[in-house]
Length: 544
Image 1 (cartoon, rainbow, N blue to C red):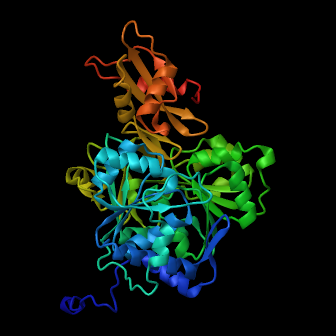
Image 2: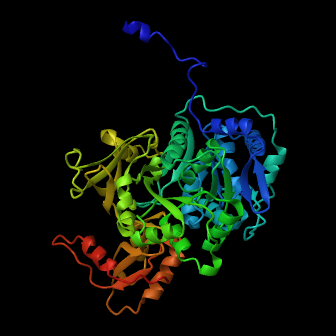
Image 3: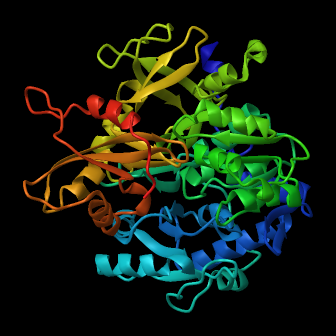
């Protein structure tokens, strides 16, 4: 009888909120002496990581940090940032990792908008934090991460990260969330329509992302993972939690160079790493004298603008096995993969590389990914030609945008998260991006808003009209290319405009090429960006 099946209530014995915090406790209990984290001359076992994070959580609680409070962190990929992925939520707080490439104005906005109660920052970024707080007119308490292998920088105040560790109670009793829907992290987009939006992750989504990744990537137990993905980006694709689940060893790298990556692969026996296509290009273009021969296959997960087929082929020739994945900040990172098919083994290297660049099929924890007609909402035919919008549904879709109910409703209405990416679906069901519905440029794995760059250009007194589109680039995947109409008699040059942009925004956002021309327009005066995209593709990229 139906009533008998519905008579059971949730109890502590049979219903535990899902949280990636449980992975650390389990791994530290089973493999307490295995190396968890390596960084230059520092290394910690899993039992040491558990004790350190517990101490930090205790120190945060002692400072009054608790449920729902935002802790903002601006740090490089060092052990501290990895530990904070556990310590902050252990205190019930929300981890906000800030892009280290951002300028002070955007950092100021994030600190204010996120309602940050505490900032933990590497001294390398202290000047940006100081300027951001000056812009906000509000001083926040700051804990300094002092990295002997970093570029230095002034401390803000006297408190250090290691003092949080030393002063924290190792017997602090922490527990997972009472509700798995509880906010775990707050990640800001790159501002694809002006100001960046705060994307809220919950414990359930992070748990399932970390569970799905090993299945999709076929991770073995105890992988040795080189953390080349910035941990500020989608919480490092949630690999901090996934590698803990697999009791792996995480090798931290502060600044990614081809020489250092090859050296760390040899020194530590790296088996896996992740990164934007620029990482692949970096490896391929590493001078012969700086390379080390791989002793075994190293598996790379790559995401961002689809890597050029030539780069994929060259990477494979070096001994790397690359898997292309796709996702967004709003989906905790990757939610689809180009799952390899046996029948592709007989194809040429170039044909295989082309297929590898497809966005593919959903990860195991992704409920559904589809390509739909924006007008009707119906799925497009699997013909490899009919374009629609990629839509996603599942537990690894964000809770919503922080303090932006209208934007949340727009993004999640109709039962799908709408990506804004135009794609086709091939007869085998694999998704392939063809264009972007929004004018977003993905450069080195970072999203750049063409609207934002255009806004800066329009601040220049000699600029009448500006339009920015993506220009293909072998190193970065894509870079901003600006088309500009100048006032009559202006003596502005490409170099002077790029210098102007450099003063107004983060370096990676500025145009790498500026073309002075009359912009093509429709009869109603709208700029025909598709014409500019075609022109940008024909221009040889010039790095400024």
